[in-house]
Length: 202
Ligand code: GTP
Ligand code: MG
Image (cartoon, rainbow, N blue to C red; front, side, top):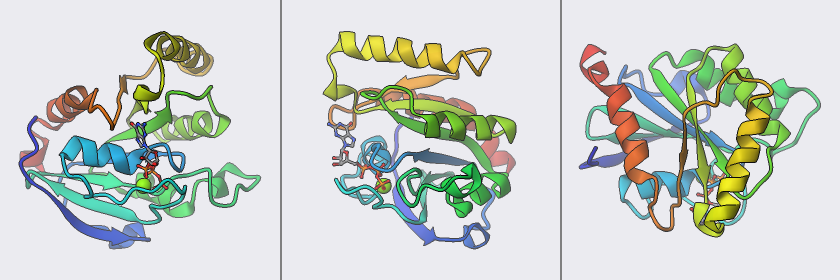
């Protein structure tokens, strides 16, 4: 898919105020600093559509972007940085879980994982929570440019091994770099494929 138009629509701290539009929606979520906003800029080909920062916790709101006038891309705040609490419920800011519970037009959540890291408990818990709530998701391994291809391969194998402790199969995944734009076509083609017919139906 080619992105011809990408425009910022609105930022909200409450899901009740998110656009009423029923356009299909794709959300980007993951730990703070994993590269969500950078990936959105890379996918849309706009350098500063979503605000990026080397300091974790930059994105604090639910940000809607309208793409090609027929679907929404959503940049969500990172989890796992602001106040880690004992209960999982509070660890993922309430409005993030409310977003996923209430936005029926959400087609797929892209859960971003830093490809350099070993599997993190909070990501595992978050994906488990998505599964329990029957919320469709894919994984995007980010910052692939920071690893040699052998290291990357090894990390992906370790990750898959960990996932298979909980899941019967590895969820669909993509490997990306916002620096080199690798993985861009794969993610956009996936969105196009799953979005087919939906924009019209809504
Ligand atoms: P919050 O909004 O704070 O949760 O962060 P975020 O997940 O939106 O991350 P952001 O896109 O702001 O990127 C965090 C840092 O990682 C920035 O310094 C980016 O330049 C860097 N970064 C993001 N993606 C990549 C990548 O693919 N490769 C490399 N080398 N650096 C990246
Ligand atoms: Mg961000």
